[in-house]
Structure formats: C-alpha cells, structure tokens
Amino acid sequence: MVSPSPRGHIPALDGVRACAALAVIGLHVAKSVLPGGYIGVDIFFVLSGFLITSLLVREADETRALDLPRFYVRRALRLLPALAALCAVQALVLAALPAARLRGPDLEGLATAATYTSSFFAAAGANLGWFTHTWSLSDEEVFYLAWPVVILLLRGSRHLAPVVFAITGAAIGWHLVVALASGVDRVYYPPDMRAEQLLIGCSLAVAVSRYRIQVPATAGGVAAAGLLAFGLGAGHLALMTYLRGWTTLIAVASAVLVGAVATGNGTWLNRLFAGPPQLWLGRRSYGLYLWHPLALLLVITYGPGSAMLRLPIVLLLSVAMAAASYRFVEAPFLRRKDALERHRARPVAAPVVAAQVESQ
Image (cartoon, rainbow, N blue to C red):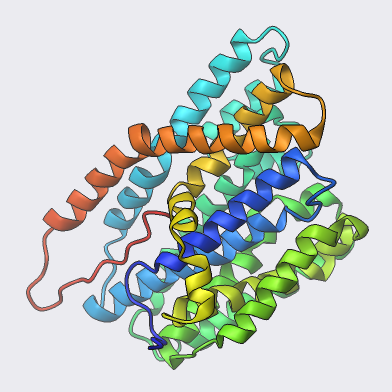
C-alpha cells in the first residue's frame, strides 16, 4: 500500500539517516575509500528540511497556527544535551592527552560549537580543530530559527507552495552566483550556501503535502545508486566543481530518495532502509555524527597507522559512543520532550497531531 502523504514517524528514513552518517565517517577515516562521503551532510540537510517542514505544515494546517516556543523547546531538548556532552568530554580528552593537546584551534572550535557559530567562523577561514564538524549543526540552527517563521507567515495561504518553490529557486541561484566568485570555505560552510539543500527538502515536503506527489521506488533506487557512485568516485571531481552546481544535483537526488522512501510504504526501497540494523543506527545517527571525531582522535593517538585498519575500529568506537550518548544523555531528554507534547494544552477546536522527528 502506498501512502503519498506520510504522517508521523517514517522508520525507513532512519535508515537513510544512518547511511548518511556512515558516509561522513568513511570520508573522515578513509578518504581514499569514500572520497565523496561529504555528501552525507547534503543528505542530512535535505532530510532535515523535509521532516521539519512536514511537521510545521501539518501543524499549521490542523490548527491554523504554530506554537513556535514549543517547537524551539523541543528542538533544544533534542539537540543541546548531546552537543553539550560532546563539548565537555572532547575538551577533557584533548586536555588530558599529551599527544593531542588542547590547542588554540580546538579552544576556538569549542567556543563556536557551544554557541552554534562554527559555520560562520569556518567560512571565514578559521581552523576549528577537532570541533570543525559542528559547522553543520550551526547551519541547521539558523534554519530552525528562521524557517518556522516563514511557515507561520504563510500558514493557510494558497500561495504556500509557490512561495516555498520560489525561495528554493532563489537559494539555488544565489549559491551558484557566490560559488562562481568565491573560495572553498565561503561556499562550503555558511548557512546561505547550504540553504539550497535544506530548501529542496522543504519543497519536497510542501509538494507531498499540497499535491500528494508520489515518488516511484525505481526513481529512488536510481537516485540512491547515483549517490553511492558519487560517494565512491568523487575523488576525481575537484571540490570547487562539486560546489559549482553538483551540490544542487546531489540535493535533488537526495530529495528523490527521501521522497521515494517517505511516500512508498511497503515498497522494496522502503524495506531496504527499514531493516533493524539501519533503524537502530538511524536513531543514533546524531550521536554518530557528533562523537566520531573523538573516536578518530583516540584511534589516531593509540591505534594503527593504516587508514584501512583504522576504519573498522573507528566505526565500532563511534557506534559505542553514540549508543552511550543515546541511552544516558539523549533518551532522558527525549522523554521530557515527549512528556511536553503529551501534557501541553490542546485547544478543543483545533487539536494538533505531532510528528515524530526526535531522530532528526
């Protein structure tokens, strides 16, 4: 049975999220094996835009309003505890390891990670040390702050879809204009350059909600194969070439994959991403992304010198750290977030059906 308008939690999207996280880890540990693993972040952004917009549009349709304070509190409960734990633990490890040392770039990276400003400093050419990977969290935070206001202003309007599509087109055009005249850091890191990927996911969510589009599993499979081929073979593609147009193609392919998985309940593609290991890893993908640099640091300091030997060790250590983070740090706050949802006031005339995006 195919559902073109998915509601609530879509388990198979956790599997997509797990693959994206593993791609980033593969890039950082064994670049020669997965030189294009950086597109895992692109997939994350598209998926984030899709899930958050689906949540916001659904709430706006059903209540003719948006509870923005509740949205921001739920996002904070989901994201802040694990990031705070990572900042504290990684800083302590860097300070304690003589071979690693807590250097100036790491201190700057720690400060920017804690304040969600990493992408702005990285775009300016700053070295953020072992906290560089938090740049993507900075970009997402800008999206979380700004995008709900856009949906709030457009709620109930028949112009919602055209306006979202127009904003997406403008973001794609802006990316290309800046990319043609700027260096790698300016194009790779800041939120205005990553907006196209988030907004392509937003456009997918609006298209599914308003037009009940249905992406065939075959199209999703072709998109997945293309993303995999790029991840394995992008070492032959210069980074600036990727930033000058390929980011848009990767985002569109990611949207096709996400759309096929989200609207194809019961299809072979949906089942492919919905296996128990994929779902388990997907629910812990935020932790995988956060903690894998610390795992890599420990393995570089004490482990084998070969990248191929390091890869399985870093993967296992990252999974262990993510599992511990999920159980002892994230899960208690997720329960608080769910309790907030259950006990909040529900207007009789306009009940709200909440979407599960806690894995996001």
